[in-house]
Amino acid sequence: MREGEESEFTVLENKKIGKNFYMYRKLTDTKALEVAEYLGIKEATYTKYERGESRITVDLIQKVSEFFKVDPLQLISAQPGNYVEAITGSNNIAIQTNSIYKATDAKQTEVMMKMMETMMQMNEAIKKILEGK
Image 1 (cartoon, rainbow, N blue to C red):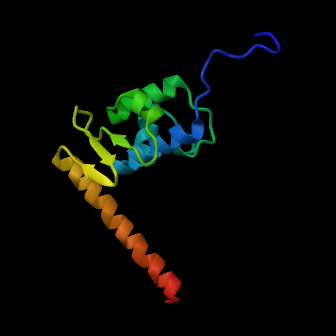
Image 2 (image 1 turned 135 degrees about the horizontal axis):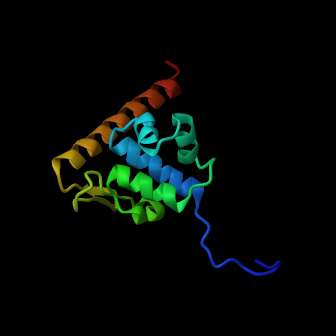
């Protein structure tokens, strides 16, 4: 490419995509090591992708989407606050709309309940810290 010419390629947003990798992993209660082994890389290498510290390629997105059984476009385009999850790899999805989750199967409901329980535990811990206990 010549100097001064603009690239026609879209630059992947490593931090956003890495955060989506992380969210899918947490929502499916999967260990980073499991994903790394599937990809044929070390766990530390994989977690660098999740943190957006390493360059994420289209090939990596494809392989991670195969592992989670989701459309690769979901890994690229999911946005915080408007997160669409295909947790089971089927056509069932859970969509957050105005802070209301609509779960379409038992696995998704279980995952959402686990997330809510974790948030409640975090709130209690923060409350104790603020109270000086």
